[in-house]
Image (cartoon, rainbow, N blue to C red; front, side):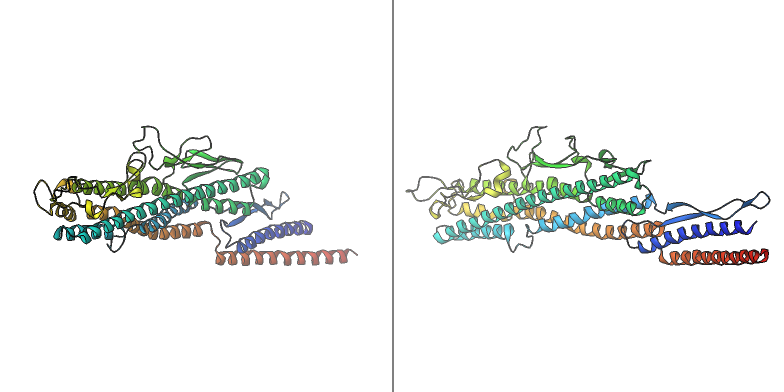
Length: 477
């Protein structure tokens, strides 16, 4: 091997080590960059055969990414479930504020006070003050139903707004990915920084919806909602939209009931059933299932409305059976409650005390039993009912409300447990990803020292060869 060939070989080695050192330096400075994956460059030995003139040496190969697609998908999956459980906690926490199972306020307190007023009226059936107390407590109960219904309706509106915001977040993330795809198609498919931005955006998207991300041969990503409906193909985005609509098949039972939330693809297809996880899936479940179970929808009156209607109807039924022992009073008792207009999904919100009800129209005598206080006694029995007519779904009104309110409490407790589990699962998935494809500063430091020593050795080789060359030149002179 000639001195010149040796110098050229050493120079090529310096170029290879310089590239390797640059990659290592880039890894170190991007160690904390979201979405960044460790890069490496391979060193390839050239053919060495001094008898055939092959001088050997080393050259830099292609740059490789340590990104592990399975580790990425594991992080997305756990982040998606964490987004769902966290949104469940937020939604149910807000919803729980509308219910008080302690009995100190709201419907349970007002219901208990009215039942006690019925009992007190039964002890003094002719007392005007006792009858006035019944009217006052009835007004408190009607107001409690109205307040709860209005609170749930406000929660519905808030949820609608959050669904729209979440759909906007999804569309914005897809729009950003479309821009990245455009850059990749323009020739930036080997840009480690762009790759980090793509995967950071995909991780953000995973908290909102479940998706499948497929990397194409040209380096772009195709995004499918729930693995089915396209959201992104190359640089073409397919936006989601949100709307509220009453279902038509089968025809709605309650035409005035709250509409159902729908997510539609860009072609108008209803893809609500494809969105079951992530923040958007949680919000849809809260809107279309949990809230609907209380305030109703196209096919159900809702438990709050059912309770308000059945209690009001039963109280009115008992009161209107009353007859006065005073011969001057020939009419029967007057209904205590009114509700409407609208169908049964509007009962709780519209429940009021009948304006025609006065202390004088509250007649205590029961014509069937000829008991002078039979009506208030029958009303007071609603606190501990024995007959099916005084119950709702086989339970007392207090028990029914307790079961209705406790659903939110149980759901919130379960959501908090899931949230804690998912926080640990996300941390574990991220740690595994970091081990597989993240930047380890200790390893990078060792690599840096290794390449630096090789660089220095080749530099010294070139210095020696330069000195030898000068010596030879001097000898020739």
